[in-house]
Amino acid sequence: MPDILLGLIGDNIAASRAPAFHELAGLLAGLDVRYERLVPHEIGVDFDRVLADCPARGYRGVNITYPYKERAAAKVRVDDPLIRRLGAVNTVIFDAEGPRGANTDHTGFVAAYLHIRGAAAPGPVCMIGAGGVGKAVGFGLLQLGLREIRVVERDLAKAEALADSLRSAEPGLAVVVTGDAVAGAAGASGLINCTPVGMVGYGGTPLPQAAMRGATWAFDAVYTPLETVFLKDAAAEGLAIIPGYELFFHQGVDAWALFTGRPLDKSALRAGLAKL
Image (cartoon, rainbow, N blue to C red; front, side, top):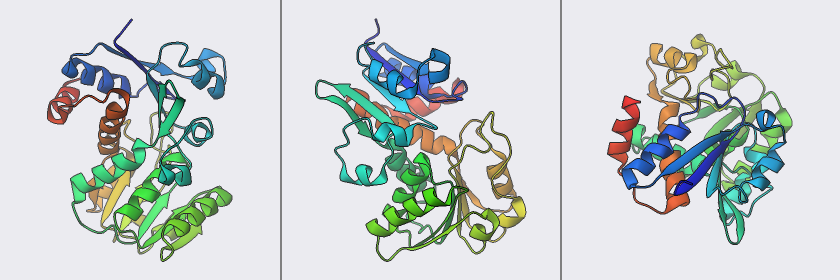
């Protein structure tokens, strides 16, 4: 039995680097860490059962990814009122008081943005996708000084719900909801993809390159592959790039702290992951 057993619950996660991240973090910290992929349809039970079975199977904690983050929020205790309002959980810790949820996508996005753009204001933002990661990024943008956002989503009811949550958190925020990504991108400074489009298994891009012209920066929550069509197109238009890998790295650092409480040599971890 390892010192710490962790896992990732999600669909289409064969290419995830989360196991490598946490097992290498364990090696650097002198811990035997095993990190397993848990795909509900492969196990043959639904998400609720996979999550409920984790404590009995010895898991210290799990990460949650697409499409279960919002579902997870209803199944665990969430102590942080901001995360309760956000309504999505990507990290669950199992302890004597029961499963406890957190959202390191939120803190990880803020850290990734500051790492690349420093104190630069986000400006008007077009964010495509209003699911679990979209909620985390949207609330992260508020922390970074967001004043205007266009939420692009095929499910307009989902987008309106996120818009209402953001307005409630920041009453002066200008929010537009649309199903048209090109219209949402017009005049935006920041372009964000919070959909699985572009991920391994979900090819393509959510926004044509021509619609990126005139923007300043772009972020893609997808990190497998490391260079998505969305980011390649944005770079070709001269935008500053925040890769999804930066979110992956920083949310992983925050999740590691929740799982273990151990310090982490981030420089050594980043260098080690680059060699894998």
